[in-house]
Image (cartoon, rainbow, N blue to C red; front, side, top):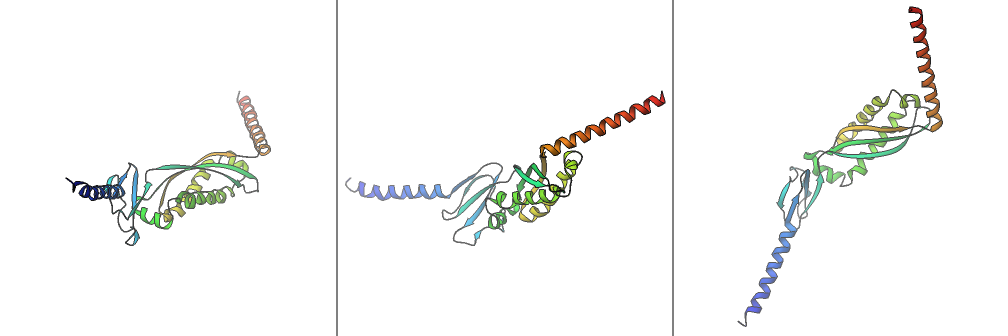
Length: 208
């Protein structure tokens, strides 16, 4: 009986050690996420194997797992851009995107967990400034919204495809012109509309 405490202490220590090792080794990946394995005693980030899928995983306690969301996400960006004649335009656009699952290891190794700030947002801003700079305020306000949206998407996708990011859609939410320019465009559009209505009434009167 006197030997029990001496035996119990090492056993208790071993049990605690096992619990700590298991807790360090256990990784649970939620739905819509995937894990990138980093082998501390190996070659670092594992890029030649698919990422770890959803569910419970056991890894060596000296390794790390970096978890990424791989389902579609949305990011909103507000920016100031210049029209073709140098006027300051406020543009609000959102992007639907997701990391390329099978290239998640390379994304982590080359871009890191903040790839949205490092790659995606700067590319959207650059594409938006390039595209909007081709149009006048009148075109931005009226008929060219869909064309601008598609061109920003095409230019952004062309770049981020090679950066392990899948771009699904770009949506131009809002285009804000300087108030004086907006008022002038609206007056011009009203005058054109009134002119068309007047011509229509004249043609109708002649037919009668």
